[in-house]
Length: 135
Image (cartoon, rainbow, N blue to C red; front, side, top):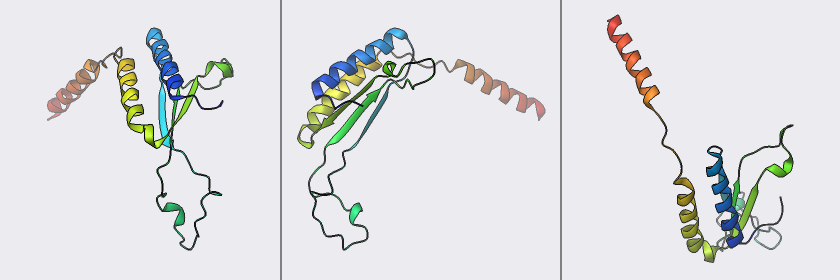
């Protein structure tokens, strides 16, 4: 994976990724986030406690946000076909980032179609009728 994008570049590319998925009419986009681990060499904590690694850090840690289209490398696909985006969000910028992140995700999900559950309901009703007939 290449270096992390700036937050603005991340949003620009995420919007284009969502738009391409909408145009195709199918496909998945994976959005993940996790805490960025800290450099243990800079933290000079004595490790007297056996659970020292479970203690919360003294300062808030940045977060890595990733997006991918979920295309894995197969025989048929080239590695360049998979879209991978990532950015690092500093603790001070989290509120503004999540506000914009929510807006982008909502806009990208507007074109989603509601699932057709009528088949499932018909199957359920058919099973209930069959059970009632057995009684």
